[in-house]
Image (cartoon, rainbow, N blue to C red; front, side):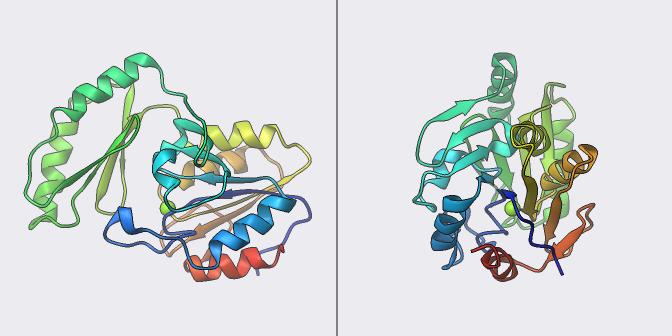
Length: 232
Ligand SMILES: [Mg+2]
């Protein structure tokens, strides 16, 4: 049983955690109970949404001004409000350059974010071949950028700004709270590692069945909602 802590500091991933995974990322509406639940949690505790998405895109799914980390740690701000870029200028330039050289493959879809982009290949004919092609394209990627391989997607973003660096900064600002982090992505592992390195009490939960260094596990958004309800 995942513990319910007294003074939680919530870090909640969006896709796959608060919203079921769907083929079209533009159609990823939250679990029906999530908007009300987030309102109740946010009234009582510090709550941060931590997502790979551009925060401006998230505002179409969440209608309340929650604090948030976007682009896997490269953005910080408020959902539907002001958003600050944390990426240095030279990384932004290198990213634009790389964006212009994405190989062209039928069925592949590029999702442009504020200062990152993701190449989705779940709809191509030959995933293995496409993955190889993308790998060799990325051989020439500058060191200041980082490629994150996810579920049939590769995301290009600045190096050194992760969900882990963001979570560490925010957790440091809340020394009297216990971080409670729920996420289903490869990039959430950076946050689990950061919280474990900090050697303070934290509840780390990987959503889904993939390998993880989190201490606990939940199956999907339904179970996430059930767990979060125990706080309200
Ligand atoms: Mg996710």
